[in-house]
Amino acid sequence: MTPEQKLQGLLRLKAHEKPPADYFENFLEEFHQRQRESIMKQGVFSLFWERLTTWADGLRRPAVIWGAAGAYACVILLICLWPKPGPSSTSSAFVVQAVPKIVPNPRPAPAPPLPRTVLPVSNTPIEALEPSGSKQKSSLPPAEAAPEPEPEPKTRDL
Amino acid sequence: MPSAAATFSDVSLSTSSRSAVRETMPTPREEDQLLVERAQNGDTSAFDVLVIKYSPKIYGLIYHMTSNREDSSDLMQDVFARAYRSLKRFRGQSAFYTWIYSIATNLTINFLKKRNRRQTYSLDDIDSGIERDEAFLEATSGSDPVREAGLNELQQKLNEAMMKLSEDHRAVVTMFDIQGLPHAEIAKVCNVSEGTIRSRLFYAHRQLQSLLADYLK
Image (cartoon, rainbow over all chains, first blue to last red; front, top):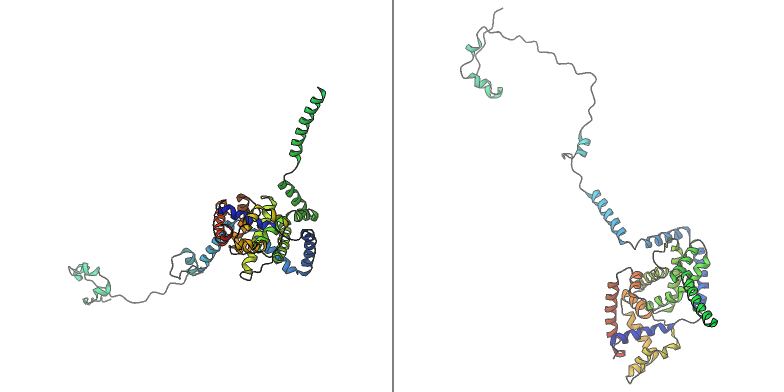
């Protein structure tokens, strides 16, 4: 006989440990009594809580459900904790919020009055006034073309 | 030969009737399912039948895991109370005894984890049948003083060795070695694979062999 078989024989001996003969006869009666007592003792909330925990225990078996619930919770948490972009962001969701509301103006604003200044009139032809290289200079912006003083225009006597 | 013909027809009739009876008689699982359905429809006496039928096995499972008869009684009350409350959700996908065994195993393991180190032994008496058991005679015969210590000593040693196993290993040893459940059923009860059950048994046996080495020589 191998040690493994001997061990199994020894463990089977434990099956001879038994409660008194009338134990199981009395058990059912005791069970009914305890059930009645527990119902009398329990309040509405504790009964509800026990039902809830019993129901939750039933969910323990398919671990997939808990895995899915955990994953869902992680996703929700991630969405909540994701850093919100500032107003300079180009995200369309925030652009919509950043653009001020344009209120349509029913009446267009009147144009400002033109200044009533008398412009001097010269008889000299344009070619005579402008030197040969001035075509290039005139194409420059006014700030850069300013240093060269222009000849004083001759006013026309009216 | 009328008598011989009559005998033959009697035999053939009895054989066919026996098979017919076998066909109409429900299996234990079907019996349990019928009782469960009755209990689900409010027939409390049907649940009482299930309690009477399974209380010795459930008690054995809990007792061999706790080594304390008072704790076993309290836990068995909890197991059947829990089963009664959850009965509406039992759909018959597994056998009733697998279902109630898993309730008992889970409740007992949770209890043992809470109880942790403050374990006290309160053992049941050993029935007289053990004195005719071959394994007992083998273990207690011989000249070794430890073996001669006898029945109570052996019971104490066995329980101490069992309590040194982890809760999961103890549950598997109880169901397989003491109660004789097959690997497949234990796997269903514990909701693990058969391979896991075999592995747990292997490690539990190895630990028990070293703890009970004096009795295994």
